[in-house]
Length: 372
Image (cartoon, rainbow, N blue to C red; front, side, top):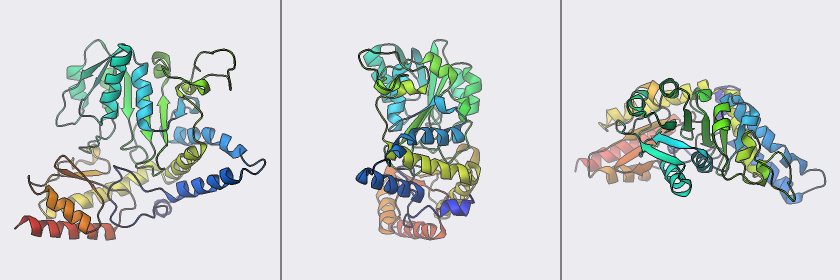
């Protein structure tokens, strides 16, 4: 599939620059959901077998993108549930930044409170950036795992997974990948646990996600809340078998097959277009957005280095002028996220000139309002 064919699956209105919050549903995902919803609605004899096929399909699609074997991938309804599985399954200390998206630190603390088998060790960072050097300096001998976001949701910083792996040795590396999965060509198998949802950059909608586990993770993690579908038996009546030895152990119940189909369709399209091609298209638009911000003297506080960024550009207007910028974006039809005095713009491969023109118009209005 060409990158142009991939981009044809974007049907959102111009002005959308908020993929870091959620991505509008991709056409293949929407069509897949519609088709299977029709099957579910009618339940014609012999037609419902298709639902049972979607779990293997989504795991195969995720395997093609991550490099993990299919039996080491399990569908999850969201990233946070997968993170909970990982944190509750740990024994020992986990090193992580308290500034990560709340899913990580809250899961670590909840596991500590409930089981007392995991202890969060809080990493001091450089303005939210988690680097191999900082981890090396703060890595204690009792640390069993390191947890990090592939892309920081506030700073847009793309962390160095390979560098972190070299620093931590054979400790577990847990990666919350949701802010880069599908658009960053990351060395996924350098991690031991990869967790992501499909509602952001993959544009597969809510209720979608995966958890991929290395051999080391399967050996060291305990599947604490493993349900009846997490065993090697289809329906274990009358007895309680142990959790499955592979990723199935991290299932709580039967997954939503229509959600699996949506995610599979989106991942298949991403694989067909190629993550490097998607990433290159995004990098070009990110550079254009940064250039536009520079033209209007708006401070860009996210990284300008292509090696340290994905699809997020963070702007920080002077104190007291955030409202002006937010209002200008709204009035010009630009969708973005405003948080803690900063404005986050997140672009995808299909961002276009019309969207950039709308953004320019918003910046012109902001500049006028801010000068009075």
